[in-house]
Image 1 (cartoon, rainbow, N blue to C red):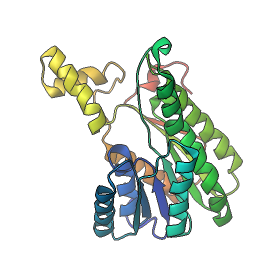
Image 2: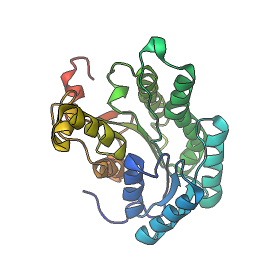
Image 3: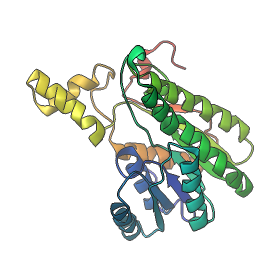
Length: 270
């Protein structure tokens, strides 16, 4: 585990960072000394409380934005307030995402557009708006949260899987374009992660089968993962911190599973 103020003087923007994976990553970067732009669809008063909590706990500067990143204009607003506050962004983590499941013939067009907009197009917009500053400074880290569904598919998730496969492709292209500019671009591909968002699925399985929550949780996980445990969000934060460190300076363009062996089962995985 990396320690110390490795990122002192850097600024990180983490989309979808008011809870779950994004919050864990923002926390790890702040703990390492980075100033942080927190983002999410949260009541402004609650966002201000979160901002203050971060500043007090980690002794860094923070900004909260509730920008709607489903549109180009919302992403431009998010980037503009971040650059105005901190002068630039050194670390970009595109984490925000939404989900909806249905067979393709029943998939609502509005849901498709929303998922592609937030899960994929937002990463394009934030990257295009911030990459020049990273190039000029000769240092930058972009981490896209892609999910195992950037590598493999599941039923009834056409929009989500399409967006996450797109994130993997975007990651590779931007990595190649910046390989000689001091900017690395990588994707993290989590499997089951122990967040509030998936807790309802575990509880629903437990209720259906008349078993304990722990048994229900295991039942859901092993349908996909050989390892019968979910990844704690803090582990994803540690991985993000490693990718921001000097030790990872030559790691770029990869899609790194942290998935309990989920994608290891696929012979086509590369």
